[in-house]
Image (tube, rainbow, N blue to C red):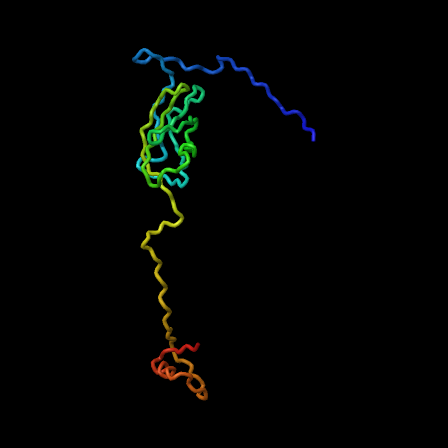
Length: 193
């Protein structure tokens, strides 16, 4: 089978004046900072003092930044769990902690974890730090019943008393059991097996 050559598109050259650059603003220390400063940055999920169901220790993290993350400036989000950096830069406001972070063993179930997040520039300098969040990483089983739970047994069936007159057995047939006559006198129904 002979295939035609693949399509190749040449990149369009971009001049440096095409994108407006951030205007440097001097701060109190005399250093210049980018005009875009983050007003707020917080961890939305997991919630503080909440819990996360994660049997494989993988869980989602959501953050909120105001204004949005400046990807063109090389800004990214760095996170750490219990003081240990995840070792990966995230460029989205919603991401999953990678399984490589935990190594060969999963963390113990139902333990408190602390999540820290910060916006960093391309050199790794912290631009805005979020307030740390503590949560419980819990495991979920299929049936969560307490150990003392036992379903109630069904009550045994009771004989039903029929209203009205009961049909009598034919007179020619003798009673099969002496108890049948006693049951008939008391108005109970006799079940034959």
